[in-house]
Image (cartoon, rainbow, N blue to C red; front, side, top):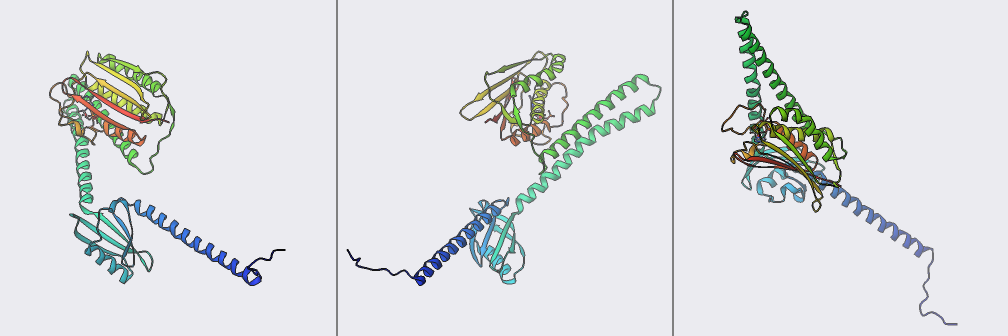
Length: 356
Ligand code: ADP
């Protein structure tokens, strides 16, 4: 019988040592996994801030979010972190220029070791404030104009109760202006809803071709009245899109309404729908042979309350909110919209929606 060179004795002591080793290794692995999870959670938290955010352990940078990748840990920032860490309390300072921008810096102690540093871009905050001031001014102006007209005509009716013809004309104007006001307020409410954090789409598989047919049918009476022909070209075998049908209908009706509004009698509106199989998108374009949009106005037509200057012709009613609503709905569907136009020749609005 062959006798082994080394005899390993495996008694209770060795067994206990192996078990202890396994327990220790598992504990270390668990601690590392816990740390890694914590770091991932912290990174997600930091990335959720719309402005630069950094996490310091003692006075060393541990993590920074995507918005602060270009930011250096400047001396000014470090002073705020150290002060907060030393005092164990929140410190807020305005740092005049970090990378050429002014920031309001907030250092918040999270634990005895960790400090969160948030940097709010003051210029961006001021720009946003100016934007809203401007927006409220524009809305007030849009509301005031019809209200002044209504007041004027109501007074006219009161001043000359026997002028029957004047009466009828004033009532017609009051009713039109009231309609304009209602439309403006409806659009403002829609926009507020689209921009609210609780906004969501009611998605369902949607046959966009059928939705276009329905919308064109809905607009056919108006098109006839304006003597404009609408035609539809549908590619065959198109896939369905996941869409909020009521919202998407609003998009198509808005674009068709604009095409009819800004096209003189005798013009044509053509709607095309096809697939872009490579990009997995449906592409819908609404083309009109109307007055077109001046080149200098084209970049702004999707902005709130923006209306392009019209060279000639009758005044056209509108609030300048339609295209903003259209763009927000298309973007909420993960799509995009663009406009091409040639003054005097017509405009094409093209939106693309992802499918499957
Ligand atoms: P509005 O209520 O004024 O029509 P929109 O937001 O729908 O507001 O459109 C913004 C502006 O874009 C319009 O005032 C108009 O100047 C221009 N526009 C939009 N669609 C067309 C079009 N099909 N043809 C020419 N101009 C258009």
